[in-house]
Length: 377
Image 1 (cartoon, rainbow, N blue to C red):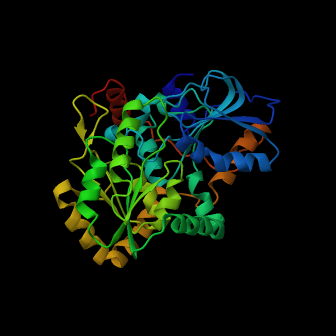
Image 2: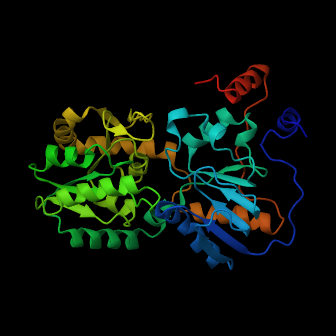
Image 3: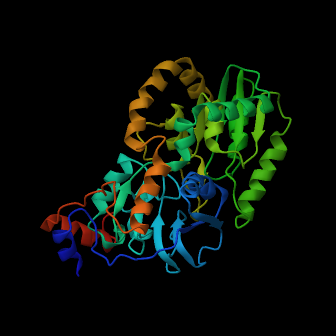
């Protein structure tokens, strides 16, 4: 079946594939770092509750009955049935909405997106064959956030324990959470704010050993700032970012997807646009296509933090509506993802509707073709 026939006959984006009968109730969650593990863990817990045998693996090419992936450009060729999630909420934000041209999902059976903003990107890209898993794309939330909404008391207790461990002295806390640590960004942050009456929380991502240069930069910065001042606190990278955000009144980053996750706790974000990102040569400026984030140059960091703390109640109240654009199914994401997987395993109708693809008008076909050829940047 060619793509035009598929899109005309199947506007919801579903492909009539032969069901894979007699699938075993065995799921492997594939991850390349601790952040991906944290993202998928709630789904694994729900799967175990429903009687699945569950395992995690960092061997991305290992065979599996049902493989669930959330890394950059994985291949599901060794999984009998497969599902794909985002690695992070700002994935390939430099080329939105054409994410799927560089990290295709068409080899997977199912795709899961966190909320309306990503759903809109998929709709705009849905004529591209690379964007279309065989059984559809489902907008079912961000499972990492489930505990924040369906186990609120447990989550708050864990956050309070972290607060006690850190020994926070001041009423307000500023979280530093970059995507990359390089060119002394953490030192910029500490130097700008350490003499103010704020707790400074330094939280680096849990980078894998495959990035020794980044790990070396983090070690250098942490050695510089450990015991530098009573209000400067280095947080273990393995600690979940949502617990760190629960302690924060404001967060500062370069272009990290944590700026989006901060919406879950109504924490305003500041992006320092002249902090460099070393994923190109030469390193580039930060790219932050999020309209709810305050963008500044690093020389304005101190003044902006002070000003935003002073008007914090008004700023936080505005973020609640923004959150709804980015997250669906709060507190229910893992359960709904497993509803879809259950239905596929048991060869019965899927209880949650997939996203509908864009109509196949001639202009949209031309646009899709141009994008595929790399002309829509």
